Image 1: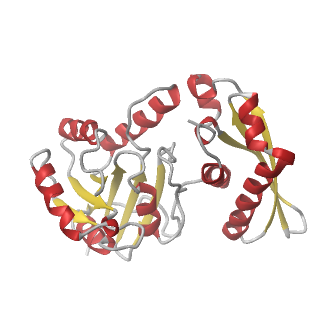
Image 2 (image 1 turned 180 degrees about the horizontal axis):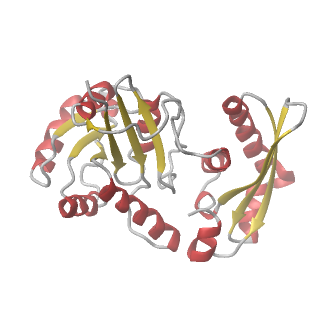
Length: 294
């Protein structure tokens, strides 16, 4: 048998479960997750390896109306991914079948004519028959090759989805070594984990006003401790005060949660130092966005 491979984009509106699905497929945390929309800002590459196949998944930012340079960068990244892959998974929320953000994705698919599967997520939150009118509604919008209801959170239907994907792989090379599951660097993953904890523990505009960069990751010569220095960028002094919290309580809570997860990931004790810096309007400044990794 020949080796099969392919690039698959997971696309959809914000907060439909794209990162949850990617993590479920890979069986480990590749992409950060929070209940807040627009958590994913960068394209995340993850690799699923089998004995005779390799699937390279691209988790894209949620496609939405843009308000800032950061939002434009996120949406442009997602739209570009639809042009570059072999197959698109259009993921939608079964509770929001009329989400207005679905329409621009359909227009992009119509322009590219990429093979696509419609994946209806969050089926665990209601009766299974909800999928039927959604399928009928979108069947005429694009010639989807299959319609797959799933629950990314519970794993229901994910095996069926993987079988649909595998039947559409074509003979091709092994793009990544078999022991590679993502192209993320340690610095990128560390920054993302810190940002996830900010999303989970703050409210309002604070999560969206924050970016995280890692200045240093260094293992002590004794090999028993990983020292990490990271910087959280916010837009105003008021945001800085909220993020630090009274007597430093909020930043301590965020740091502890991030440290515990990083220790599990790296298998070593971690000393995490967090510094908060004000950088006015960073998400509207294209130069600042490039410097911060967007």
